[in-house]
Image 1: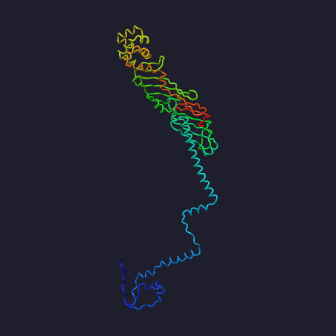
Image 2: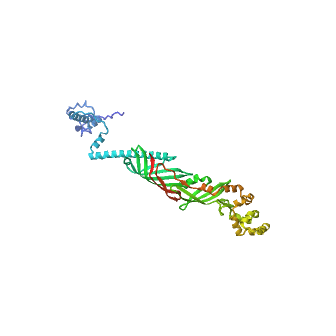
Image 3: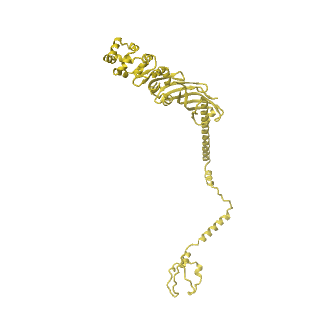
Amino acid sequence: MRSPHRIATLPSDHNQAYPSDGWQDESVPPEAQAMPEAPAETTAPLNPYDELGALAPNPLEEFLHETADDDADDSEAPWQPPNHRRGSRRRNRFAGLPIAGKLVVALLVATAFLALGDRWALLYAEHEAAEKLKESMHLSAAPEVDIEGFPFLTQVLDQRIDKVKVTVPDVAADRISLAQVTATANDVQINGDGPTDIKGALIREMHGEVLLSFEDLNRELGASQVTFSGHGRDQVLARGTLPVAGHDLKVRADARIQRNGDRGISTDIGRMSLQIGDLATYRPGVRDSEGLHLSRSSVEKLNEETAKAKALLSVPSIVKRIGVPDSVISAALQSDAKLNELVGSPRFINDVMGLNLIDVAMGHPELLKKLGLDPALLKGLSELTRPVLADRLTLAFRLPKLPGAGNVWLKDVSVQKDGIRVQLIGAGLGIGN
């Protein structure tokens, strides 16, 4: 701490005034001014810090004056305990609202609680309805139920709901699964004593849609690697491969979709064919155009493959079927030029292509080997009749029976890009008790 700097004193006989002579009289109290001056030889030198302290106001003087004023006020008013509650100011503001404002606030709070209770009752009712549908329809997963209309509690008290939407995924229908069933029920009568005690419902009117997606068809019927696609309004094309006797044969089929009664869909499979490479084509059936037939390219190659042509003409039943005179056959078997002339004629090509090898080659299995066909394949094709192949490619299904009484029937069937869509309607459907 620095020690105060002492100012050297002037001689007593020095008549020059201090620098503070101009304001000393004002800053020194009257009592100090009235005091007699000490003798010059005993007067202590003036301290500049004392002069500065005289200029500053006394801090205790203001504090003492304020305390005195407060004591005077407190003596007049009666003593009360201090209020330390923080919400007093907010309550005072609320108390300052008019009565109409208070009623509006109370009404808004009550409305919020009623809306919250209404939504809770709605969610509970939707959950219970989904569980009842799952149990009654034997579903693997609960459907999605959406009850429309607000407020819900007034509809329950009236025991009547305007509209309910139900979405059921993956409904089993015979060999295939319906990808999605959506239904909108109108004018639903509720059977129950309250929102938490709904025992059942009666649907007076219902409109719905069923989707049979091609993606599900490809997965469920795709063991043979067959894919389905839409073609037009009522046709479905099936393309892919089908294993037969260890050979993967290309399959082609066209299915026509149509209604079968009020609750079913049938498919008329037509133009079915199995292609054995570029050698032959199999069409199941008993007509002349059906069966196993050599392709045009394979018949035309007989002109270059003399051994296959002679093996074909060596079977009397084949010669008889194609209607070639015996003299022409004899000359063709003895001369390659005559053979090429016979085999290369357009009539011979058409006649051989119209020959059903299944009927002929059953008694001549060696002929199949010479033509490049596996005898086991011929046996597998003979067992793959038209009904068997059609059953593998059929898309027919029937709507599952809905719970309770009432009727549901199909309204319209159409083939779209994503699958087969079926419009349905219903009336008088009962759910629960």
